[in-house]
Length: 545
Image (cartoon, rainbow, N blue to C red; front, side):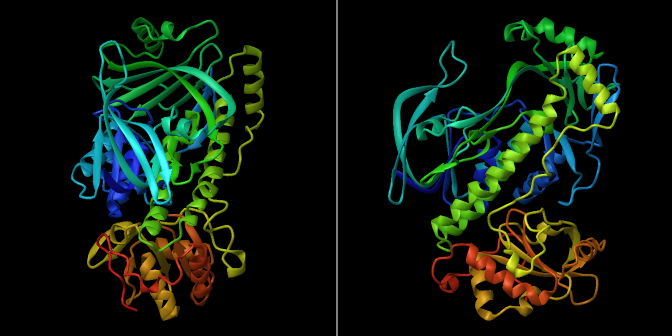
């Protein structure tokens, strides 16, 4: 029986990312998947700048971007192709990339799989299925059954070959129909959105252009979604109408009939998937039991209309990984993991509500209701939307520190800097396995006590002075950091390992109070200063101060 720090159930995008993060953090991990091969077809098509930054941290952004389509707009039109809604997806995101991309999911999954195949601390049990689990005082025992394909079955079937493993923690990233969630008896809230749509993915045979390229056609006769999937593929989605069955729309002739209505023909594309999906909105009532945690679709499913389902799951993985690392290294108490659901659940619930409100627009099938909808849009009405999601609670600076409340919980800036004669994005020099303390005035460590510095070093920290004047640790190539700090009236900032701002100080002298607040919130084990300094992973260095 093998022992692991972490067992990850499910080898979809969230499980792959979780395993890659574990490898990066040198955690002893295993990923368990009942299938033997990666799924060769796309599910999610959209990623935003924050997720590209996550891919950058794992070394697969370049592969993903090589076959991605940076979107400039995402538009919704009515049956007459008149504009209803327009989302500006062409701006530059704060993470250092375009705000949004359409991509072909197998590209980054393959790149992550290749990383894991050579990861020294991660095992892969492919063709194995979790059958049962037993939690004990210091871990969880998982009972696994080998699987095999059986004629007439579309999914692997468990055999009588059994093995067991132990892990200190379990992450269930096994999808919307999560077996682990069912074993735990965790119920989900149903937001009442269960819409069936036909999804057709196609490989382009030749270059061609479409009058309508990216967005929603909100036609009550039949709503349609049109999307690029990177540079070589495209996706179309059609709502099922009352009286239609999945079998009706999964007939190959039906796909070509619907594509012809979009002026797309067999000489243009090769269909690689034609399947009816149910778009649902469900949210787990709790995200963990004991040492077992849900992530991705196992915890939350979101309608696709804002492209945030997979993105939300990848955020789960990043949030959970750095907290598990602190606990497994003995820096933090296990109670730190209580912040996982507190931080991620409101965030994903907000995105689900936004997606629901957005989805009501194209899913209108009643002609009169659609006419009234169009009139409301023409008069300037917009559907109600929650505030754009950010972290609203959890490990964030307390107001007593003087940190501006509007910046805590937002994504931090990443921009080009010059370091040791090379120019690259900031994280390439100072990887996001650590907290980062950034100042445009001086090295942040210069105002901290030795005790604070030693505690931060055990946790893992970069101290970085970014500026344009001589003496800075890195040069602010485009004055992006200078402008960001000036606009927010701050001199110092603490960035969490998942790219979110813990807090900021209007003056560098205020950093000490922020650090004490952070140390207090990380549930540290007694005095962490006796622990070894956190290992540096990447090109950066611990700055002299």
